[in-house]
Length: 510
Ligand code: 3SK
Image 1 (cartoon, rainbow, N blue to C red):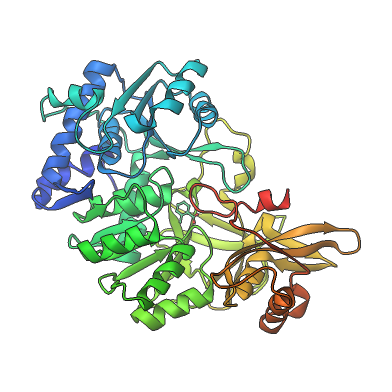
Image 2: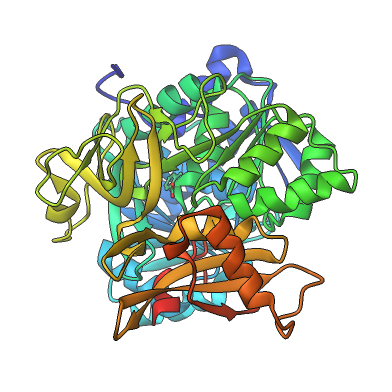
Protein backbone atom coordinates (compact mmCIF):
# COMPACT_ATOMS: atom_id res chain seq x y z
CA UNK A 1 0.00 0.00 0.00
CA UNK A 2 0.92 3.64 -0.19
CA UNK A 3 1.04 5.14 3.26
CA UNK A 4 1.36 8.88 3.56
CA UNK A 5 0.89 11.23 6.53
CA UNK A 6 -2.48 13.00 6.84
CA UNK A 7 -0.91 16.22 5.63
CA UNK A 8 1.39 16.33 2.65
CA UNK A 9 2.14 19.10 0.20
CA UNK A 10 3.72 17.92 -3.03
CA UNK A 11 5.27 21.35 -3.63
CA UNK A 12 7.25 20.88 -0.41
CA UNK A 13 7.88 17.15 -0.91
CA UNK A 14 9.65 17.75 -4.23
CA UNK A 15 11.78 20.71 -3.06
CA UNK A 16 12.47 21.55 0.62
CA UNK A 17 12.01 17.92 1.71
CA UNK A 18 14.57 16.86 -0.91
CA UNK A 19 17.04 19.41 0.46
CA UNK A 20 16.43 18.01 3.96
CA UNK A 21 17.13 14.52 2.61
CA UNK A 22 20.58 15.69 1.47
CA UNK A 23 19.93 16.42 -2.22
CA UNK A 24 20.37 20.23 -1.93
CA UNK A 25 23.47 20.44 -4.14
CA UNK A 26 22.27 18.01 -6.78
CA UNK A 27 20.92 19.29 -10.10
CA UNK A 28 17.13 19.34 -10.15
CA UNK A 29 16.32 21.15 -13.39
CA UNK A 30 18.19 21.85 -16.60
CA UNK A 31 16.69 24.28 -19.09
CA UNK A 32 17.24 27.60 -20.87
CA UNK A 33 20.95 26.79 -20.82
CA UNK A 34 21.26 26.59 -17.01
CA UNK A 35 21.20 24.10 -14.19
CA UNK A 36 19.30 24.63 -10.92
CA UNK A 37 20.01 22.67 -7.78
CA UNK A 38 17.37 21.38 -5.40
CA UNK A 39 18.31 24.14 -2.94
CA UNK A 40 17.91 26.80 -5.64
CA UNK A 41 14.57 25.30 -6.64
CA UNK A 42 13.37 25.28 -3.01
CA UNK A 43 14.34 28.96 -2.59
CA UNK A 44 12.89 29.98 -5.96
CA UNK A 45 9.54 28.28 -5.29
CA UNK A 46 9.35 29.76 -1.77
CA UNK A 47 9.85 33.27 -3.16
CA UNK A 48 7.21 32.63 -5.83
CA UNK A 49 4.75 31.22 -3.28
CA UNK A 50 5.25 34.33 -1.12
CA UNK A 51 4.46 36.52 -4.13
CA UNK A 52 1.37 34.47 -4.98
CA UNK A 53 0.00 34.75 -1.45
CA UNK A 54 1.07 38.27 -0.46
CA UNK A 55 0.86 40.15 -3.78
CA UNK A 56 -1.67 38.20 -5.82
CA UNK A 57 -3.91 37.22 -2.90
CA UNK A 58 -3.99 33.50 -3.65
CA UNK A 59 -5.85 31.51 -0.96
CA UNK A 60 -5.82 27.74 -0.31
CA UNK A 61 -8.16 25.98 -2.70
CA UNK A 62 -8.04 28.76 -5.33
CA UNK A 63 -7.50 27.45 -8.84
CA UNK A 64 -4.52 28.70 -10.82
CA UNK A 65 -4.04 28.18 -14.53
CA UNK A 66 -0.48 28.04 -15.81
CA UNK A 67 0.29 28.70 -19.47
CA UNK A 68 3.76 27.83 -20.65
CA UNK A 69 5.89 25.53 -22.76
CA UNK A 70 8.10 23.05 -20.85
CA UNK A 71 10.75 25.07 -19.02
CA UNK A 72 12.11 25.42 -15.45
CA UNK A 73 9.94 28.47 -14.72
CA UNK A 74 6.81 26.41 -15.42
CA UNK A 75 7.94 23.75 -12.96
CA UNK A 76 8.77 26.41 -10.35
CA UNK A 77 5.35 28.09 -10.74
CA UNK A 78 3.59 24.74 -10.49
CA UNK A 79 5.44 23.74 -7.30
CA UNK A 80 5.00 27.19 -5.75
CA UNK A 81 1.27 27.25 -6.45
CA UNK A 82 0.93 23.91 -4.63
CA UNK A 83 2.95 25.30 -1.71
CA UNK A 84 0.36 28.09 -1.56
CA UNK A 85 -2.36 25.42 -1.36
CA UNK A 86 -3.74 26.18 -4.82
CA UNK A 87 -5.18 23.69 -7.30
CA UNK A 88 -3.20 23.89 -10.52
CA UNK A 89 -4.39 23.59 -14.11
CA UNK A 90 -1.45 23.31 -16.51
CA UNK A 91 -2.37 24.17 -20.10
CA UNK A 92 -0.85 23.52 -23.49
CA UNK A 93 0.98 26.54 -24.95
CA UNK A 94 -0.73 26.26 -28.33
CA UNK A 95 -4.25 26.71 -26.94
CA UNK A 96 -6.21 29.65 -28.29
CA UNK A 97 -8.26 32.12 -26.24
CA UNK A 98 -11.51 30.23 -26.90
CA UNK A 99 -10.06 26.96 -25.62
CA UNK A 100 -8.51 28.67 -22.60
CA UNK A 101 -11.86 30.28 -21.78
CA UNK A 102 -13.59 26.89 -21.91
CA UNK A 103 -11.08 25.60 -19.34
CA UNK A 104 -11.25 28.70 -17.15
CA UNK A 105 -15.04 28.64 -17.05
CA UNK A 106 -15.30 24.88 -16.52
CA UNK A 107 -12.87 24.96 -13.58
CA UNK A 108 -13.92 28.42 -12.32
CA UNK A 109 -10.31 29.57 -12.35
CA UNK A 110 -9.51 32.89 -10.63
CA UNK A 111 -5.77 33.27 -11.34
CA UNK A 112 -3.52 32.70 -14.32
CA UNK A 113 0.28 32.65 -14.50
CA UNK A 114 1.44 33.10 -18.06
CA UNK A 115 4.80 33.08 -19.83
CA UNK A 116 4.93 36.65 -21.15
CA UNK A 117 5.67 35.32 -24.65
CA UNK A 118 2.23 33.67 -24.65
CA UNK A 119 0.25 36.56 -23.20
CA UNK A 120 -1.93 37.58 -26.17
CA UNK A 121 -4.37 34.66 -26.11
CA UNK A 122 -4.41 34.73 -22.28
CA UNK A 123 -5.37 38.41 -22.25
CA UNK A 124 -8.20 37.73 -24.72
CA UNK A 125 -9.38 34.89 -22.50
CA UNK A 126 -9.32 37.20 -19.45
CA UNK A 127 -11.63 39.64 -21.27
CA UNK A 128 -14.04 36.83 -22.17
CA UNK A 129 -14.16 34.97 -18.84
CA UNK A 130 -16.35 35.90 -15.90
CA UNK A 131 -14.19 33.93 -13.43
CA UNK A 132 -10.62 35.00 -14.16
CA UNK A 133 -9.69 38.00 -12.02
CA UNK A 134 -5.90 38.17 -12.26
CA UNK A 135 -3.32 37.32 -14.94
CA UNK A 136 0.33 37.68 -13.98
CA UNK A 137 3.24 37.23 -16.37
CA UNK A 138 6.42 35.27 -15.68
CA UNK A 139 9.63 35.00 -17.64
CA UNK A 140 9.79 31.58 -19.25
CA UNK A 141 13.38 32.22 -20.30
CA UNK A 142 14.37 32.30 -16.58
CA UNK A 143 15.92 35.78 -16.79
CA UNK A 144 13.49 36.86 -14.05
CA UNK A 145 12.34 39.73 -16.19
CA UNK A 146 8.56 39.80 -15.71
CA UNK A 147 6.04 40.92 -13.09
CA UNK A 148 5.89 37.70 -11.10
CA UNK A 149 9.69 37.34 -11.10
CA UNK A 150 10.15 40.90 -9.85
CA UNK A 151 7.60 40.38 -7.08
CA UNK A 152 9.27 37.10 -6.12
CA UNK A 153 12.81 38.49 -6.09
CA UNK A 154 12.00 40.83 -3.23
CA UNK A 155 10.50 38.05 -1.10
CA UNK A 156 12.21 35.83 1.49
CA UNK A 157 13.37 32.30 0.65
CA UNK A 158 11.31 30.94 3.55
CA UNK A 159 7.63 30.18 3.08
CA UNK A 160 5.21 28.60 5.50
CA UNK A 161 3.59 26.17 3.05
CA UNK A 162 -0.10 25.35 3.39
CA UNK A 163 -0.66 22.05 5.22
CA UNK A 164 -2.72 20.43 2.53
CA UNK A 165 -4.42 17.13 3.30
CA UNK A 166 -3.21 14.09 1.42
CA UNK A 167 -6.68 13.90 -0.16
CA UNK A 168 -6.89 17.58 -1.07
CA UNK A 169 -7.06 18.22 -4.79
CA UNK A 170 -3.68 19.39 -6.13
CA UNK A 171 -4.19 19.14 -9.87
CA UNK A 172 -6.92 19.40 -12.47
CA UNK A 173 -5.77 17.52 -15.55
CA UNK A 174 -7.76 18.51 -18.60
CA UNK A 175 -8.32 15.96 -21.30
CA UNK A 176 -10.00 16.45 -24.61
CA UNK A 177 -9.14 12.83 -25.32
CA UNK A 178 -9.21 11.87 -28.94
CA UNK A 179 -12.82 12.92 -29.35
CA UNK A 180 -12.70 16.62 -28.76
CA UNK A 181 -14.84 17.61 -25.74
CA UNK A 182 -12.80 18.65 -22.64
CA UNK A 183 -13.16 17.15 -19.16
CA UNK A 184 -11.24 18.00 -15.99
CA UNK A 185 -9.84 15.13 -13.91
CA UNK A 186 -9.15 15.83 -10.22
CA UNK A 187 -6.01 14.44 -8.58
CA UNK A 188 -5.01 14.60 -4.92
CA UNK A 189 -1.59 15.43 -3.46
CA UNK A 190 -1.14 11.75 -2.61
CA UNK A 191 -1.89 10.70 -6.20
CA UNK A 192 1.13 12.66 -7.41
CA UNK A 193 3.35 10.73 -5.00
CA UNK A 194 1.74 7.37 -5.77
CA UNK A 195 2.69 7.54 -9.46
CA UNK A 196 6.32 8.10 -8.46
CA UNK A 197 6.43 5.60 -5.58
CA UNK A 198 4.57 3.09 -7.75
CA UNK A 199 5.40 3.11 -11.45
CA UNK A 200 8.60 5.20 -11.38
CA UNK A 201 10.13 3.22 -8.52
CA UNK A 202 8.90 -0.26 -9.37
CA UNK A 203 9.18 -0.19 -13.18
CA UNK A 204 11.93 2.39 -13.83
CA UNK A 205 13.91 2.09 -10.58
CA UNK A 206 14.76 5.81 -10.65
CA UNK A 207 18.01 6.78 -8.89
CA UNK A 208 19.49 10.23 -8.10
CA UNK A 209 22.04 9.80 -10.93
CA UNK A 210 19.26 9.68 -13.54
CA UNK A 211 18.78 12.47 -16.08
CA UNK A 212 15.32 12.64 -17.66
CA UNK A 213 14.45 13.91 -21.13
CA UNK A 214 11.25 13.83 -23.14
CA UNK A 215 8.69 15.50 -25.33
CA UNK A 216 5.25 15.42 -23.68
CA UNK A 217 4.05 18.81 -22.43
CA UNK A 218 3.77 19.13 -18.66
CA UNK A 219 0.14 20.04 -19.26
CA UNK A 220 -0.32 16.34 -20.16
CA UNK A 221 0.02 14.18 -17.05
CA UNK A 222 2.34 11.83 -18.99
CA UNK A 223 4.79 14.76 -19.18
CA UNK A 224 4.14 16.08 -15.68
CA UNK A 225 4.98 12.67 -14.22
CA UNK A 226 7.85 11.78 -16.54
CA UNK A 227 9.57 15.16 -16.64
CA UNK A 228 8.85 16.64 -13.20
CA UNK A 229 7.39 14.36 -10.51
CA UNK A 230 9.54 11.28 -11.20
CA UNK A 231 12.94 12.97 -11.33
CA UNK A 232 12.22 15.33 -8.44
CA UNK A 233 10.84 12.58 -6.18
CA UNK A 234 14.17 10.71 -6.33
CA UNK A 235 16.78 13.48 -6.44
CA UNK A 236 17.36 13.06 -10.18
CA UNK A 237 17.63 15.79 -12.86
CA UNK A 238 14.98 16.83 -15.37
CA UNK A 239 15.91 18.46 -18.67
CA UNK A 240 13.12 20.68 -19.98
CA UNK A 241 12.84 21.53 -23.64
CA UNK A 242 10.50 24.15 -25.05
CA UNK A 243 10.90 22.55 -28.45
CA UNK A 244 11.27 18.80 -27.91
CA UNK A 245 11.66 17.77 -31.54
CA UNK A 246 13.57 14.47 -31.93
CA UNK A 247 16.79 16.30 -33.05
CA UNK A 248 16.61 18.55 -29.97
CA UNK A 249 16.04 15.55 -27.70
CA UNK A 250 19.02 13.78 -29.27
CA UNK A 251 21.20 16.85 -28.69
CA UNK A 252 20.21 16.91 -25.01
CA UNK A 253 20.69 13.15 -24.59
CA UNK A 254 24.21 13.44 -26.00
CA UNK A 255 25.08 16.62 -24.07
CA UNK A 256 23.82 15.55 -20.62
CA UNK A 257 24.13 11.79 -21.06
CA UNK A 258 20.39 11.46 -20.34
CA UNK A 259 19.38 8.10 -18.92
CA UNK A 260 15.55 8.03 -19.09
CA UNK A 261 13.41 9.20 -22.00
CA UNK A 262 9.66 9.70 -22.22
CA UNK A 263 8.15 10.08 -25.67
CA UNK A 264 5.88 8.50 -28.27
CA UNK A 265 6.70 5.83 -30.88
CA UNK A 266 6.86 8.35 -33.75
CA UNK A 267 9.76 10.17 -32.07
CA UNK A 268 11.53 6.87 -31.33
CA UNK A 269 11.30 5.99 -35.05
CA UNK A 270 13.12 9.22 -35.89
CA UNK A 271 15.70 8.54 -33.16
CA UNK A 272 16.33 5.06 -34.54
CA UNK A 273 17.02 6.56 -37.97
CA UNK A 274 19.36 9.14 -36.42
CA UNK A 275 21.35 6.32 -34.79
CA UNK A 276 22.22 5.11 -38.30
CA UNK A 277 23.67 8.55 -38.93
CA UNK A 278 25.79 8.50 -35.77
CA UNK A 279 23.51 9.77 -32.98
CA UNK A 280 24.80 8.46 -29.65
CA UNK A 281 21.91 7.36 -27.45
CA UNK A 282 23.97 4.87 -25.48
CA UNK A 283 23.43 6.73 -22.18
CA UNK A 284 19.70 5.89 -22.18
CA UNK A 285 18.97 3.04 -19.79
CA UNK A 286 15.17 3.40 -20.03
CA UNK A 287 13.11 4.42 -23.06
CA UNK A 288 9.45 4.78 -22.12
CA UNK A 289 6.93 4.75 -24.95
CA UNK A 290 3.30 5.73 -24.41
CA UNK A 291 0.57 7.91 -25.77
CA UNK A 292 0.15 5.69 -28.82
CA UNK A 293 0.63 1.95 -29.03
CA UNK A 294 4.21 0.84 -29.73
CA UNK A 295 4.45 -0.96 -33.08
CA UNK A 296 6.43 -4.23 -32.85
CA UNK A 297 8.97 -3.15 -35.54
CA UNK A 298 9.98 -0.10 -33.48
CA UNK A 299 10.31 -2.22 -30.30
CA UNK A 300 12.37 -4.81 -32.21
CA UNK A 301 14.69 -2.31 -33.90
CA UNK A 302 15.32 -0.57 -30.56
CA UNK A 303 16.18 -3.90 -28.99
CA UNK A 304 18.51 -4.72 -31.87
CA UNK A 305 20.32 -1.36 -31.79
CA UNK A 306 20.52 -0.74 -28.03
CA UNK A 307 20.27 -4.23 -26.56
CA UNK A 308 17.59 -2.88 -24.19
CA UNK A 309 13.82 -3.22 -24.15
CA UNK A 310 11.75 -0.19 -24.92
CA UNK A 311 9.10 0.03 -22.20
CA UNK A 312 5.62 0.29 -23.66
CA UNK A 313 3.02 1.45 -21.18
CA UNK A 314 -0.54 2.69 -21.12
CA UNK A 315 -1.87 5.41 -18.91
CA UNK A 316 -4.75 7.84 -18.91
CA UNK A 317 -5.21 11.37 -17.70
CA UNK A 318 -8.11 9.97 -15.65
CA UNK A 319 -5.74 7.54 -13.87
CA UNK A 320 -3.00 10.22 -13.73
CA UNK A 321 -0.23 8.07 -15.19
CA UNK A 322 0.84 4.64 -16.44
CA UNK A 323 -0.99 1.66 -14.89
CA UNK A 324 0.04 -1.19 -17.24
CA UNK A 325 3.61 -1.59 -18.43
CA UNK A 326 6.26 -3.90 -19.73
CA UNK A 327 9.25 -4.43 -17.42
CA UNK A 328 13.00 -4.46 -18.17
CA UNK A 329 13.12 -8.17 -17.41
CA UNK A 330 9.63 -9.05 -18.62
CA UNK A 331 8.59 -7.65 -21.99
CA UNK A 332 7.13 -8.83 -25.27
CA UNK A 333 6.58 -7.23 -28.69
CA UNK A 334 3.11 -5.83 -29.43
CA UNK A 335 2.28 -6.22 -25.75
CA UNK A 336 1.62 -3.56 -23.11
CA UNK A 337 2.67 -5.86 -20.26
CA UNK A 338 1.07 -6.34 -16.86
CA UNK A 339 -0.52 -4.00 -14.29
CA UNK A 340 1.80 -1.79 -12.26
CA UNK A 341 1.91 -2.70 -8.53
CA UNK A 342 -1.35 -1.79 -6.77
CA UNK A 343 -3.43 -1.86 -9.98
CA UNK A 344 -5.68 -4.68 -11.22
CA UNK A 345 -6.87 -5.05 -14.80
CA UNK A 346 -9.51 -7.14 -16.55
CA UNK A 347 -11.11 -7.27 -19.97
CA UNK A 348 -14.89 -7.08 -20.00
CA UNK A 349 -17.87 -7.15 -22.36
CA UNK A 350 -20.56 -4.48 -22.67
CA UNK A 351 -22.28 -5.81 -19.51
CA UNK A 352 -19.09 -5.69 -17.44
CA UNK A 353 -18.54 -9.49 -17.49
CA UNK A 354 -14.99 -10.72 -17.92
CA UNK A 355 -14.40 -12.13 -21.42
CA UNK A 356 -12.38 -15.33 -22.06
CA UNK A 357 -8.60 -14.99 -22.38
CA UNK A 358 -7.57 -13.98 -25.90
CA UNK A 359 -10.88 -12.24 -26.61
CA UNK A 360 -10.95 -8.51 -27.30
CA UNK A 361 -13.11 -6.49 -24.93
CA UNK A 362 -13.04 -3.29 -22.90
CA UNK A 363 -10.15 -2.64 -20.55
CA UNK A 364 -11.23 -2.08 -16.92
CA UNK A 365 -8.74 -1.10 -14.21
CA UNK A 366 -8.74 -0.17 -10.56
CA UNK A 367 -6.04 0.83 -8.16
CA UNK A 368 -4.63 3.59 -5.98
CA UNK A 369 -5.43 6.35 -8.53
CA UNK A 370 -8.63 6.70 -10.51
CA UNK A 371 -11.04 8.91 -12.35
CA UNK A 372 -12.78 11.82 -10.63
CA UNK A 373 -14.21 14.14 -13.26
CA UNK A 374 -15.06 17.63 -12.12
CA UNK A 375 -18.82 18.21 -12.49
CA UNK A 376 -19.25 15.88 -15.43
CA UNK A 377 -21.96 13.32 -16.12
CA UNK A 378 -19.42 11.18 -18.00
CA UNK A 379 -18.09 10.02 -14.58
CA UNK A 380 -20.87 7.40 -14.51
CA UNK A 381 -19.70 5.95 -17.79
CA UNK A 382 -15.99 5.96 -16.93
CA UNK A 383 -16.25 4.45 -13.45
CA UNK A 384 -18.49 1.43 -13.45
CA UNK A 385 -18.93 -0.68 -10.28
CA UNK A 386 -15.61 0.65 -8.98
CA UNK A 387 -13.70 -0.13 -12.18
CA UNK A 388 -12.32 2.53 -14.52
CA UNK A 389 -13.35 1.71 -18.07
CA UNK A 390 -10.72 3.52 -20.08
CA UNK A 391 -12.18 3.36 -23.59
CA UNK A 392 -9.44 1.04 -24.85
CA UNK A 393 -10.06 -2.33 -26.45
CA UNK A 394 -7.59 -4.95 -25.13
CA UNK A 395 -7.21 -8.70 -24.81
CA UNK A 396 -5.49 -10.60 -22.00
CA UNK A 397 -3.48 -13.68 -22.94
CA UNK A 398 -3.26 -16.94 -20.97
CA UNK A 399 -0.22 -15.61 -19.07
CA UNK A 400 -1.97 -12.42 -17.96
CA UNK A 401 -0.21 -10.06 -20.41
CA UNK A 402 -2.37 -7.32 -21.88
CA UNK A 403 -2.45 -6.63 -25.60
CA UNK A 404 -3.79 -3.38 -27.01
CA UNK A 405 -6.24 -3.75 -29.89
CA UNK A 406 -7.65 -0.25 -30.41
CA UNK A 407 -9.43 2.62 -28.77
CA UNK A 408 -13.02 1.40 -28.50
CA UNK A 409 -13.87 4.09 -31.04
CA UNK A 410 -11.19 2.76 -33.41
CA UNK A 411 -12.66 -0.74 -33.87
CA UNK A 412 -13.92 -1.05 -37.42
CA UNK A 413 -16.78 -3.42 -38.22
CA UNK A 414 -16.60 -4.37 -41.88
CA UNK A 415 -18.87 -7.07 -43.36
CA UNK A 416 -19.30 -8.46 -39.83
CA UNK A 417 -15.55 -8.64 -39.13
CA UNK A 418 -14.12 -6.75 -36.15
CA UNK A 419 -10.93 -5.05 -37.32
CA UNK A 420 -8.62 -3.19 -34.96
CA UNK A 421 -7.34 -0.10 -36.80
CA UNK A 422 -3.92 -0.09 -35.04
CA UNK A 423 -3.20 -3.63 -36.22
CA UNK A 424 -3.60 -2.50 -39.83
CA UNK A 425 -1.47 0.57 -39.03
CA UNK A 426 1.32 -1.63 -37.63
CA UNK A 427 1.26 -3.72 -40.83
CA UNK A 428 1.44 -0.61 -43.01
CA UNK A 429 4.25 0.89 -40.91
CA UNK A 430 6.43 -2.11 -41.64
CA UNK A 431 6.50 -1.01 -45.33
CA UNK A 432 9.41 1.30 -46.18
CA UNK A 433 7.13 3.78 -47.98
CA UNK A 434 5.08 4.55 -44.86
CA UNK A 435 6.34 7.22 -42.46
CA UNK A 436 3.11 7.57 -40.49
CA UNK A 437 -0.42 6.33 -40.89
CA UNK A 438 -3.85 6.22 -39.31
CA UNK A 439 -6.61 3.79 -40.13
CA UNK A 440 -10.31 4.56 -39.76
CA UNK A 441 -13.64 3.03 -40.74
CA UNK A 442 -15.28 4.71 -43.73
CA UNK A 443 -19.04 4.22 -44.09
CA UNK A 444 -19.85 1.86 -46.95
CA UNK A 445 -23.23 0.82 -48.28
CA UNK A 446 -22.35 -2.83 -48.86
CA UNK A 447 -20.01 -3.58 -45.97
CA UNK A 448 -21.19 -1.15 -43.27
CA UNK A 449 -17.64 0.21 -43.09
CA UNK A 450 -14.45 -0.30 -45.02
CA UNK A 451 -10.90 0.09 -43.76
CA UNK A 452 -9.41 3.39 -44.93
CA UNK A 453 -5.74 4.22 -44.38
CA UNK A 454 -4.41 7.77 -44.28
CA UNK A 455 -0.73 7.57 -45.10
CA UNK A 456 2.16 10.03 -44.82
CA UNK A 457 4.82 8.80 -47.25
CA UNK A 458 8.47 8.43 -46.27
CA UNK A 459 11.07 10.52 -48.08
CA UNK A 460 11.83 9.27 -51.55
CA UNK A 461 8.34 7.85 -52.21
CA UNK A 462 5.82 9.49 -54.51
CA UNK A 463 2.05 9.18 -54.23
CA UNK A 464 1.79 9.35 -58.02
CA UNK A 465 3.74 6.14 -58.35
CA UNK A 466 1.52 3.71 -60.15
CA UNK A 467 1.29 0.53 -58.23
CA UNK A 468 2.06 2.05 -54.81
CA UNK A 469 -1.50 1.62 -53.49
CA UNK A 470 -1.62 -2.00 -54.62
CA UNK A 471 1.86 -2.64 -53.19
CA UNK A 472 0.73 -1.33 -49.78
CA UNK A 473 -2.49 -3.35 -49.91
CA UNK A 474 -0.58 -6.52 -50.81
CA UNK A 475 1.91 -5.83 -48.05
CA UNK A 476 -0.90 -5.70 -45.46
CA UNK A 477 -2.53 -8.84 -46.90
CA UNK A 478 0.78 -10.68 -46.51
CA UNK A 479 1.32 -9.44 -42.93
CA UNK A 480 -2.12 -9.98 -41.36
CA UNK A 481 -5.43 -11.64 -42.25
CA UNK A 482 -6.19 -10.42 -45.79
CA UNK A 483 -9.76 -9.27 -44.98
CA UNK A 484 -8.19 -6.47 -42.88
CA UNK A 485 -6.43 -4.77 -45.80
CA UNK A 486 -7.24 -1.08 -46.46
CA UNK A 487 -9.65 -0.95 -49.37
CA UNK A 488 -9.11 2.80 -49.51
CA UNK A 489 -5.75 4.57 -49.15
CA UNK A 490 -5.49 8.36 -48.93
CA UNK A 491 -2.09 10.05 -49.08
CA UNK A 492 -1.67 13.10 -46.88
CA UNK A 493 1.09 15.53 -45.88
CA UNK A 494 0.39 15.20 -42.11
CA UNK A 495 -2.01 13.49 -39.73
CA UNK A 496 -4.24 15.51 -37.39
CA UNK A 497 -2.93 15.19 -33.83
CA UNK A 498 -3.67 16.49 -30.37
CA UNK A 499 -0.97 18.62 -28.78
CA UNK A 500 0.10 15.52 -26.91
CA UNK A 501 0.81 13.75 -30.17
CA UNK A 502 -2.21 11.44 -30.25
CA UNK A 503 -3.70 10.94 -33.67
CA UNK A 504 -7.22 12.39 -33.90
CA UNK A 505 -8.85 9.66 -35.94
CA UNK A 506 -12.26 11.26 -35.44
CA UNK A 507 -11.08 14.14 -37.64
CA UNK A 508 -10.16 11.71 -40.40
CA UNK A 509 -13.58 10.06 -40.08
CA UNK A 510 -15.24 13.47 -40.40
O1 3SK B 1 -1.14 6.46 -22.30
C1 3SK B 1 -1.41 7.66 -22.15
O2 3SK B 1 -1.97 8.27 -23.04
C2 3SK B 1 -1.12 8.40 -20.86
C3 3SK B 1 -2.02 9.32 -20.43
C4 3SK B 1 -1.78 9.99 -19.24
C5 3SK B 1 -0.68 9.74 -18.49
C6 3SK B 1 0.21 8.83 -18.93
C7 3SK B 1 0.01 8.17 -20.12
C8 3SK B 1 1.02 7.21 -20.59
